Every structure is written in structure tokens, then in C-alpha cells.
Length: 205
Image 1 (cartoon, rainbow, N blue to C red):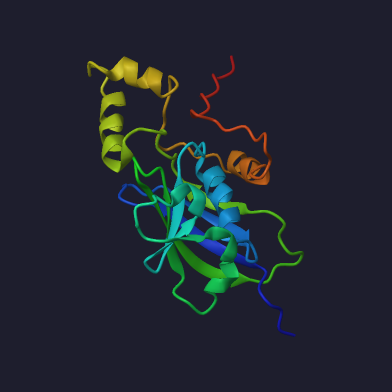
Image 2 (image 1 turned 60 degrees about the horizontal axis):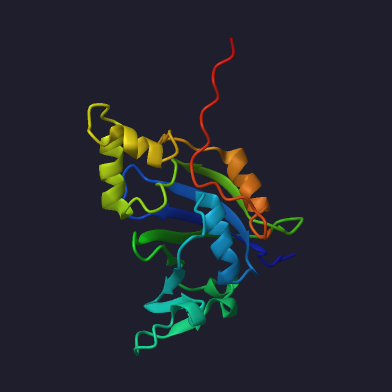
């Protein structure tokens, strides 16, 4: 018997960064774009401190109250009116933009439509790689400069830059269990958002 899909598997990566920073997610397919927003924030560890929008087929989707510039710019459509399942049979890719200053472009590709039993109640991260850049680092080019500085102990800004980043930053850091914990709490009003990476635990003994 045919069972309709109730979930979608997404591959999400940050544009213009190598090696790739990415997450593979399974999300309920009846969720709207405004519910996908906190999922993406949690999956990458962003702090939801900046504006965001989805860009689909040349159109903008988000909170029109926050994003409408009042100067006749491109119309912003309501993200609460678009469900992921609306993409069935269409081109399965779109973009999520976060922080219009740093301009983090998340490339979202629909990989598969799933019929799960039981139906999913929250998003899950299956796998991924690498830590997201620090907030307010200056976009992909600023992140490249940041990595060069923290990797060079002789750089005049090495200590101050590390201190700004919380005292520690590992670009290869990825904790699947922690990400899935954040995804389960993504819609909690008091969900804790980490500005910095967790410090590595000191070896025992």
C-alpha cells in the first residue's frame, strides 16, 4: 500500500567555504519555512541574532514586517505560508540567508521524501561536518582571515582574536549528539544558545 511521505531529508551546506561545512537533516514535511528557520539555527549552532530569509526561485520569504524596507524593494512573502511538502515535484533546492551583513548563504538541497513510522515530531541531524564560523566574523572572507590569525601564534592579533572567539576554536569540531539535543529544544522559548564552541575536556589523569 502506498504511504505518503511525512518527512524530507535535506542536505544543507554553507556557500563559499572549503572544506565544506554541512549538515544532513530529516524534517517533518508538513512544516512551514518559519519552522525550518530555528531548525537551521540549531543545526549549525547560530545564535539567531540577525535577520534571515529564504530565497526560492528568485522570490524572498520571511517575516515581511521585519524585512520590508519600505522603499519599494522586492516583496517579501510570508514564510508561514510555504510548507516543505509544497516542493514535491519541483526543483528541490533553495537558499537560506542569515545575517545580511556577514551574508551566510545556506544551500539547501532536498535529497529524498520519506515515509517514516512513526511520523517524526522534530528534526534530526543524521550526519555533518565541521563547526560553523563565529558569529560576526565577517562572512566567508572574514572567516578565512580569522582562521589564518588563530593558526599563527606569532600574529599580533592572535591572542585577542582567540579571546574574542571564547578562548578556543576548532574548525573541525562537530558533535552530533549536541546538535540533536539542540534540535529537540529548537522551539523552546528559553533554549540556550551558545555563542562560542564548548571547550575541549582536559584528559583524565
